Amino acid sequence: MPRDVLQNINVVGATMVYQEGEQCRWSLDWLYNFCDRVVILLDNYNKETEKIILEYKEKYPDRTYIIYSTIPVSEKVNRIRGQMKKRFKQNQDVIREQVFHELRRIHKIKPIDLLIFPDSDEIFIDSFPKYLETFWYSNFDHMMVGLVDVFDSFQILMRSAMAPHGRVYRFKPEITNIPWKGRTRYLPYYYEKRPWKLRHVVVHLCYLTEGYREKRRFADNGKLHEIINKNVWFLPQDVRTMDREEIARYQPGPHNYPAEMPSITLGEYLENKDYYVKKYNLKLWNS
Image (cartoon, rainbow, N blue to C red; front, side, top):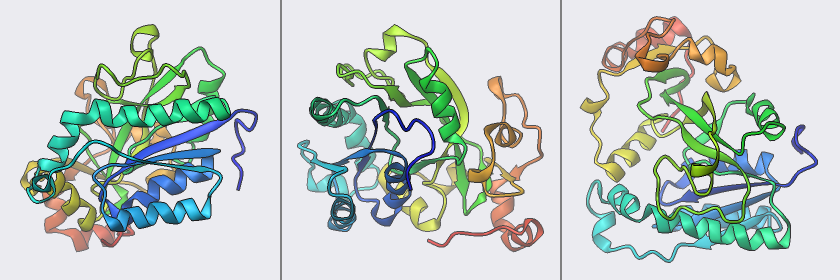
């Protein structure tokens, strides 16, 4: 169904996929639901993920633009834990630049007004379109948005260590990731204006299921013990249906100001999962 905000502008979504398989559908479904056109970069991908992307191309042939990354991948990268992320970090500037090259190309075909560029393991809360509308009619030219991590359920938030990242841009054809500035703060935006920082509007899905967590642990060589002492909060409803002010009650504030609502550690939850699932009537997602 067509979006009910910003109907008079051209909105393009973009994302990059690698070997996440079915997990990328979350982000893609959101982008196709909201955006007029979608650009997808396949980098270090596998056949399963490519098949899914081609499925979207078949379903939305006039709205889909697929790019195959030209950055080489050695066999060792996909065999050894942690090498996928290391390769990406070392080449992030030129990998992302391929997306911008394609955006500049399609901008000449039909001008892009607004660019939304999440990672493939991210979706936005249901009320995010109203913030996009506010942004469009403001003097800001890009948004830095804050993420929340879900674990096992959209009703369980885990404390996130990620600072806000750039995800929304009033499109400028000169957009570039070279030289790389970090946290997806692209040029020329980086030097021109301060962004609109908006916390608690992106749901990070890489910890949602055990299957997602295992893929991430292999890709970046993460360990469960590294997050076992993180705080978790139980929500009264699906985080996607909550507004950012409500979500903020279940996360630490600026400068590590304590969260308003009480929490427990992830370890305590995992040791007593059945008890907490029943107590808070949690809907768990399967791997």
